[in-house]
Structure formats: C-alpha cells, structure tokens
Amino acid sequence: MDNEITSLAMEITERKSVVNWTLQTVSDEAWRLLLEAARQAPSSWNHQPARYILLKEKNRMKQLCSAFHRTNKWAEKAAGFVVQAANPDDDDRVSGKDYYLYDCGLAMMSLVYQAQIMGISCRQMIGWDEKEVKNLLQVPESYRIVVITAFGYPSSSVFSTGMEAAKRRLTQQDKRYKPEHIAFWHTWGGESFENC
Ligand SMILES: Cc1cc2nc3c(=O)[nH]c(=O)nc-3n(C[C@H](O)[C@H](O)[C@H](O)COP(=O)(O)O)c2cc1C
Image (cartoon, rainbow, N blue to C red):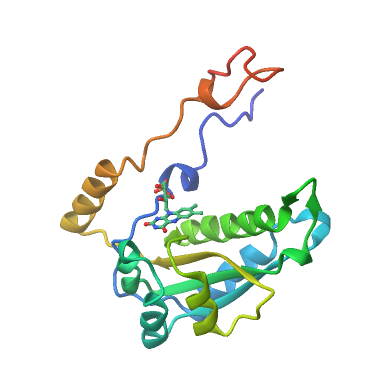
C-alpha cells in the first residue's frame, strides 16, 4: 500500500511523564483546548462521566499538594492541575466492571496527547488522600476522584533534561513489556505477536 504509515506518531514516541517544568504558565486558550480534548473523548453509551476541577493559582495548587503523598511533592512546580472526578452511577456497570474508570481514562488520555501536541508535558497521579482532596475541593460525596494530572512546559536545559533522564532510568520508566508478553494471535497464550 502506497500510503501506509510505517512509524508511530511522534506524539506517542515523545510523550513522557516528565516533571522538569519551566515557570511558563499555560494560556487560557491552551486550557480550553486541553479540556476540549477530554470532552471529545468517546465513552460507553456516550455517558461522559468525567468531571474536572481545574487549578492554576499557585496558592490553591499548594494547598492541594498538602493532600498528596510525599513522593508527589514535585507537583508543586506544575503550571496547572486537572483533577478528574466521576460518579460511578453515571456510567455502565457490566458484570461487576465499572466503566466510568475506563471512560475517564480515555478522556484523560485524550487530554494528555492534546497537551503533548501543544508542547505541554503531563504527569498523572494517584498518590493522594482522596478524602482530603474531596474536602479541599468541595467535591460531592457521590463522586470519586479518579486521577490528578499535573502539567507544564518542560525545560530544555541540559542539566534539567539530564537529571530527568537519570531519574527515568532509575525508576525504569521507559521499560515496557515485550509485544509477545502482552498480545497473542487468536487465543490466549496462542501464537505470540512479535511484529511490533
Ligand atoms: C493512573 C496513573 C497513575 C500514576 N500515578 C503516579 C503517581 O502517583 N506519582 C508519580 O510520580 N507518577 C505517577 N504516574 C506516572 C507513571 O509512573 C508513568 O506514567 C509510568 O512510569 C510510565 O512513564 P511515562 O509516562 O513517562 O511513559 C501515574 C500514571 C498513571 C497513568
């Protein structure tokens, strides 16, 4: 086929959860596009369970950081936080599987790639105290906090990128299972998929 694409999209290969952000703020238009990317995501029966609390003021972000696990204190340097919340009853529950989590994940992934295209790097987090987060943000009882995404413009300084790369190596962040570990042809455990 003439027009066959033979490589991954640049946004996929370049997306990394780096946190060496600069002090650059994110414009209102960029915030709008990020939320729009999340809003356009698909969801089961178009239930659209995800809700968002957006934080860009330093004092509010700092306050929210008090509910973060100590290993997530780096988040203070972010230009913004997107707190994603959802009510499980707003989405399908099939054979004990809560699809609000899946749909929220799709929406956040859409936001993350829109950010990547705009040169913004995101780091999603689940290391926080949900009760504290809900209290601080006045989230109704029936909602769950699904994920908090911190983002900003990554620094290009040699020192900063070098430190970030060293940290990634240490925590093995680039490591992925081999294709044959995660995919099979036809049946579970059948002929392995190696052509990735
Ligand atoms: C649902 C989810 C929760 C995460 N929670 C945290 C977290 O609490 N703290 C943190 O530093 N990174 C967190 N991460 C970032 C992952 O560690 C990171 O995505 C993973 O190591 C792969 O690295 P990459 O995103 O740069 O490819 C989270 C990522 C996801 C998708």
